[in-house]
Amino acid sequence: MAFPTDLAAHLAEGVTTTCRAWAIVRRDGQTYGFTDHDLDLTFEGIDFVANTGLTAKALTQSSGLSVDNTEAMGALTSAAVKEEDIIAGRFDRAEVRAWLVNWADPAQRVLQFCGEVGAMTRGNGAFEAELRGITESLNQPQGRVYQSPCSAVLGDGKCRFDLNTPGYVAEVALQSAEDNRVLRFELPGVLDGFDHRWFERGRLEVLSGKAKGLVAIIKNDRLSVDLREIELWDRLQAGIEPGDMIRLEAGCDKRASSCRFKFDNFLNFRGFPHMPGEDWLMAVPKQADSNTGGSLGVGPGG
Image 1 (spheres, rainbow, N blue to C red):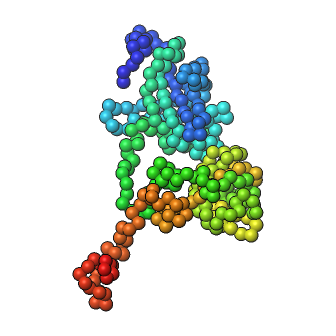
Image 2: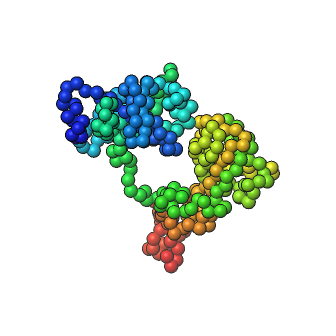
Image 3: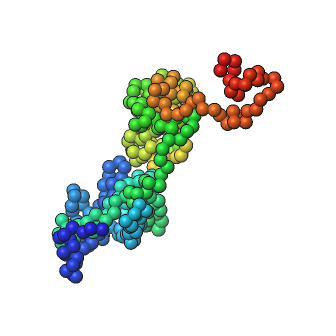
């Protein structure tokens, strides 16, 4: 790691005034700054707070493509990291940067680590977070999968469908909830006109209240005479209450017919709907079939 000239000169003096500083930026934009110095620091528009109890283990780095990693440990406090935020997953995959800083002159610093929060555990009033370097993304599978269903995510850059299109999204106040997993909405109301099961496999986002910013996938969407019931695959990890605003997005089952008729987006379909199924692989000639020498499963003229 190359140090800036001024910081390298300071380190060469023997007696140094250095400390470490960390910045954590959650996916909702909330930013936290920590330092192991006994006084607060400020640089790059971030306030790095002392006395937070946050410490870090030794950073493992290499010059190759192996993943840089380390761990951070600290105390759960209301002013910094809250236990309920960890439970709700608000720190999952948060961006992390770590510097070595001359606290007497914060302009003398070097960025030692850049990555994201991995596994995070809590207990006994403290938390421990795994920090993964940016090369971690190289461990992810790349390329497309040859499969019949669509491989895109509804609304992403490959799908290109605009989820803000009228008729495919609704923002509605919650009527009641059961175990933060089964949500009920009053009818008639904003959800009038949406077909039965329209939102199944879709995305739900909480827009207000204690669970603001949390996202979940919809398992079931049921209609009755006076209410609509939305069941999630996993319960929301923060409390929701009647009156909280909820955003519902239409669901996609990845089938070619749904892409064509529900979303009118077949030009961007990312699957292979005409590939043979597993039953075709087991097909053999039968005496009752028309054995013309053509491809199995193809009728006359195929």
